[in-house]
Length: 591
Image 1 (spheres, rainbow, N blue to C red):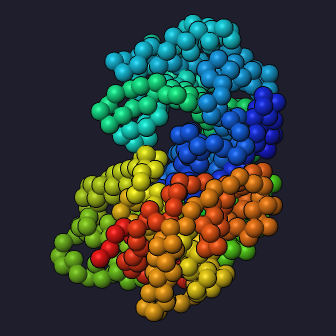
Image 2: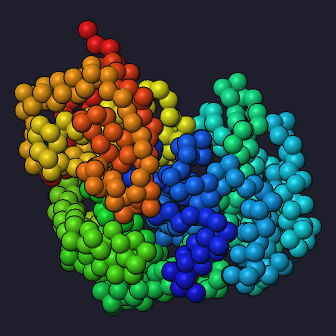
Image 3: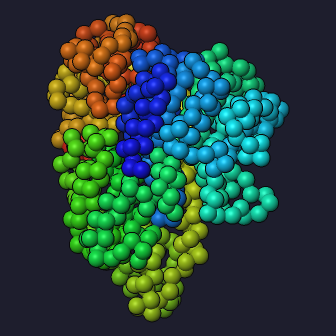
C-alpha cells in the first residue's frame, strides 16, 4: 500500500461516518504558541477539546504532520523519527466509546484487511482515581477480539493526561498488531513490550474526567474521543517491512541518497536513516516558516540539518550542495498531500543549501580549534571531555570524528567524561521539550490569553506603521511575556518601537470589543483577514476582529475587550536570523 492510499482510506472511511475532513495544521502551533512544534494530532484541537465550538462540527478527521525532538540523537535506529504523520478522528462531545471502538475495528477489518487474531488491545486496569475500564474490554469482545488478546494495564500505560497539572484526561485503549513472524519474548510479554512481537498502531483516548488542582478527578460534561494512528507504523505493518524506512514513504528518499553516495542502504543503515529522517523533517519545517537560528524551533532545524550533513559526509558525500537534491525528492513525493511544500520550494532549497554551507565553514573553524586543543594539551595524551564536548556543541564535531583525528596524532579522548556531559545535554533537551509541551497544552490561562490578543495588536502595529508586507514568522507565549518574530531586513529604531508601543496602548485604552466570527476562507480573504498558514485552514475559519485595528484568522484564545490587557510594554528587540527580527513584550498595568 502507498502512503496516499492509506491517508485517503482513513479519511474517506471516517467521512462516511459523518466526520468533516480538516486540513493538517502547521508544524508551528497556532492555538498553543507556548510550544515549539505540533507534536500530536490532537495538539491543534486543544481549544475544541476544552469546549470551544469547532467551525467544522463535532466529528472531525485528518492526517496531521508532527515533529517530536526529544530523541534526536536516537534517530538512526529502527524506530525513532523526528517528523511523522498522525491519522486521527475526533468526537467533540458527540459519540463515545461504543462507536469509537466499533469504527476502529471496522476500518482495520474491512478497509485494511487485518483479522481479529492479528490484533491485541489494552484497557485501563483501574486505580484509586478511576475504576477498571470493563466497558472498553466488553466492547472489544463484542467486535470479536478474544479475551486473551485483551490486556488491562495501569495508568502509565493506559491513561492520557492531563497535559499539565490540571485539565481533561481519561483512559485509553491501544490497538496493537501481532507480528506472527516473531515469537513472544517470554511469558510476561504483553503489548508495550519492546521485543517486536507487538506493534502499536492506534490509540483511542476517552477524555471523560477533569483533574483539578487538588488532584481530584470528576466526570467531564463534554466527553471527547481523541484518536491517533501513526501513518508510518501502520504502513510498515501493511507493507510487511522490518522498519518504517523500508516503506514507500522512504524508498525515493533513500534511493536518492544511494545515488549521491554510490553506496547501498544496507551498507550503513544508520547513516541513511539519519539523513532521510532529518532532511524530511527539515523540508517540512522550512515550508512552515522555520529558519535556522540559535534558539527555539530554529535551533532544532539547525541541529537536524547539521546532523544530516555529518552523516552525509560519513557516506562519502563530502561536498556541500547535495542536501537540496534529497529535499527535492521530499517536495516532489509529499506535495500531493501537503501542497505548502511546492509553494515554498525555492525557500526550502535555498535555506537548506545556505545552512549546509555554513556548517561546512564551521567544521573548518572547528578543525582549527581542534589543532589548538592538541597544541595546548601539553604532555597529556588524553583530550579532556569538556573540550571535546565543546567541539561537539559549538562546531558540531561528532565524537567519532574527534576520536579519529586524535588517534591519528597519538592522542586519546576522555570518552566517559564526554558521554556524561552528552547525556546531561540530552536530558536537558528532553526536559525542555517535554516541559514546553506540557506547559503549553495546559496553559490557556488569563495571562496567556491576554498576551495572545496582544500579538494581534502588535502585528497590526507593525504592518500599519512599519511595512504592510510584514508577516509573522514565529510566536512564543509564556504567562510572563510574548515573543513575536517578523520579517524585516533592518533593526527598528527607538522611535519606531515607541510608536508601535503607543499604537498598541491606544487600542487598549479604546477598549475595543474582540469579535469572533465563523466564515469561509474566501469570506475571510474578502475581509482582508490576515492568516499565517493558509494551507492549514479548512472550509470554515474563525476570524477575530478588533474594530478597524486588527482582523486575523486564528483559533484563539482571546479576551473579550482590548481594555483587559491594561497596558503594553516592549522589553527588547532581537535579531533572529537574516531578514527576521524579534520583539519581546509584556502586558499589564504600568506606571
